Image (cartoon, rainbow, N blue to C red; front, top):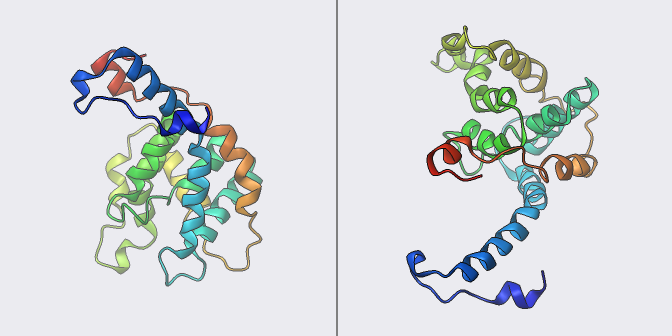
Length: 200
């Protein structure tokens, strides 16, 4: 797509007045925008260098350490990306960061990984909530869920232990090909949206 096309706009000001050719053009622009998602994710991850302070490592180093541990343990690319992105919502969704990260991952990963990332904040409380007046065992409400043990494993192996300033993490540059690979091929669109509106 050339720059001329990028600068063109549609004529309508109400969506109900748009023509088929205008929506075809907007679809083309959206496809181009979607193709740049990996780069935007890389930029958002880089910003984590300046996120939450107080820990012995930056938030970026925390997720790099998590992803490195998952990679070195032989986990799939999807699990490695889950570890890398699990805290990407910290800046914009400090009260619901798990849900934001899960929503980003959802079209590209299995239901299991989506569920684990969506709930990892609750499972992570096991390690600290009792020190701050919270419920350390809040995760137990999901004890019968099919992905309970996966969430326990994720938090134990790729989250709570990833604040070590002496750990030799891979760089963000190392993970760029994996980001490009996973986030260039959505497996599906939002199933609830598909069911409700009949999109395919």
